[in-house]
Structures are given as C-alpha cells and as structure tokens.
Length: 397
Image 1 (cartoon, helix red, strand yellow):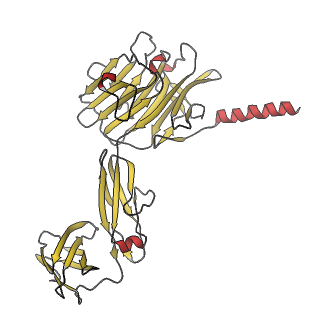
Image 2 (tube, rainbow, N blue to C red):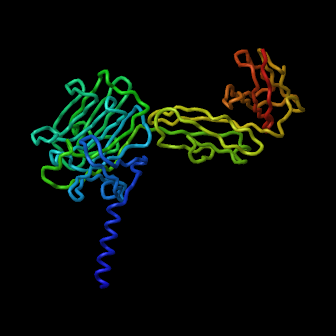
Image 3 (spheres, rainbow, N blue to C red):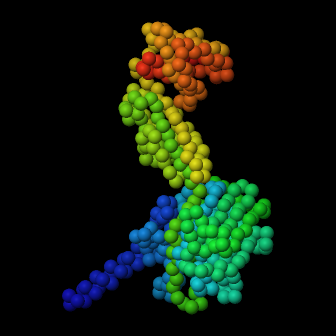
C-alpha cells in the first residue's frame, strides 16, 4: 500500500509540474511575457507551462514544441517593452536547419501584421525549400521585401542580427558566434531592406517563437527544442551626478522611470533607446529638481548633473563675503567679493534645476551678461575662499 502511495505522489508531483503556468520569464536581462491560449501564426496551441518555456542554470532560453495527449503545443515569448531602432542580435544554439519541415523559428519585432521585421528558419512544410528567411511585412512577398537563402550550417551555433533605423533594415546571418560578431568568412547571408514598409519604432515588441506551420504537426511526429544562448538589443546607459555634496550627504538620490533609487554618480545600464524620465528624491531641507526627460542612445552613456537647492539657511544675497547686484537683474549681473577675495567658481541654475552657466572665475569680480535669460528666479552657487554659498536672484525685464 505504501509503494502505491509513493508512486501516486510521484505521479502527482510530475502532473503538477506539467500543469504549472508561467506568465513572465527573465532572459538576457530582459523581462518577457509568455504566450498562452490559441491563435496565429498557425493557428496553434500556445503553452506557458514550464515544460514549454524555461531558462536553464546557464541562463539559456529553451522553447519546446511538444505533444500533450492528442494536441501539439508551441511556445512564444515577447518583451515587455519597446527597444526601438538599433541593432538586434541573437545567438542560436540549435541547428535550425535540422528541424522538421513543418517547424518554424521566429526572431522578430512585431506591432501588428503590417509592422513586423522577421528573421525566420523554416522549410514551410516542403523539405526542398531553403530554410533561411529575412522578411519585412506585410505581404505579398517578393524580392523587395523578402530574402531567402540556404543556411548550410557548420555547427549547432549561429548568429543572426538586424540593424533597424528609419531609412533601412540591414540583416545578416553568420556561422558560429562571438562578442564582436564572427569574421566575414563566416557570413552566411546579408540583405538590406529599403522599401516603404519600414515600420516606425516605439510600439513594437521583440518576439521569439517556435511553432508549427499551418498548425500541422511535425511530419516526423517528434517533439523539438530550440535553445537561444543570448539576445542583444539596442540599449544605452545613464549616469547622474547630484550636487551639492551636502544634499548628497543628506540623502539625495535619483531614479529612472520610477525604478530603484540610485546614489549620485551611479550608472544605470541596459536602458532602452529613446526617452526616459529621471526623478529626484525629496529630502528634508532641500528642494529637489523637477523630473526631467532624457534621451538614451545606443551604446552610449548619457550624463547629467542636477542641483538640489537648500530650503533653509540660504545665505543672503548680500553679506560680508560677497555681493550680487542689481537685483532684480536686467541685462547684466555682477557678483563681487566683498573682501577682495578670489571667487573660485560660479554655477547658475534655472527654476528646473538645469545648469545655464558654470565657470571657473579665479578673480574677485564677475560681470555676467544675462540679457538672454528668461524672467524668473535663479539659483547661484558660489565657491569663494574655500566656502560654498547658495543664493537666489531674479531677472525681470
């Protein structure tokens, strides 16, 4: 009786594992949704079971076409965000030309059926077809929007990429892979699309799928597995410095797109190309800069410096160490050391916390032309005789 119970428990465990549904997965530093239900392409059944989609201990993605009962199930994941224009690269660790003629591998961006960029591997149900395809939707397909080619792979490993910009899309496939892309003698095929159906960036999502052509089961009736070792998407970085040091010491921090709070000088990597919002943490005794939009560019670090302004203890506009006049200012502003000391440097910020002037002075007086400044309140940071001062002044014309 005990043995029967043990067998039943083991069976129940594997049944539960088989039925476990996932909605998301993380792979290659990207958060992906996992598809489930039924529908095209095919149409097919799509499974979000951990038996259909998983990431192994090495960080490699596995997608599986499998049979459960009398039904066949396919697998697809799609990124939760747009990555926009730039270079997309896929390291495939399965020999895709050895799959059954009814199996399709898709590496693509998709917004809708008229806005899609495809790298696909399939013989489309006919074993005599070539198995490599670069396509820009929509149909009809011809030499202007589709390139077909044999793979003739030398191993299980291959690299496939496209570089997408607003004027064209450049595709390439290579034998093997490396960080800098394989050498030219490993090139399988390349093609450039310059037609009118180049989709705009911003609403597309990156997809990887493994499916059955026309929903037909494999001719050989065998399950199949696709392994992707890595995916590289267009990304850039952002580094933000916060000033002054007193505000940083009091807890000033920043984040991007309401993410994790970061310390001054931290670099956030793997940001999607395009606009992002930088926010600043509120801290006692300091007015944080207003949130600001920054543009991230592919393979570049964007830098920014932002000032917190003290809300208490602000030095008067005129004291025993310096003078600022006339206030309100009109066309010119004078900053003068009251004791004939050297003014080391001056930084002026507008009401949004953006730097509009910054300079090394190294003299006792600066006469600054502010005729191009808009009316409003400005914040001035003065480094004088190894002391830091903060003051406000206004411009009215």
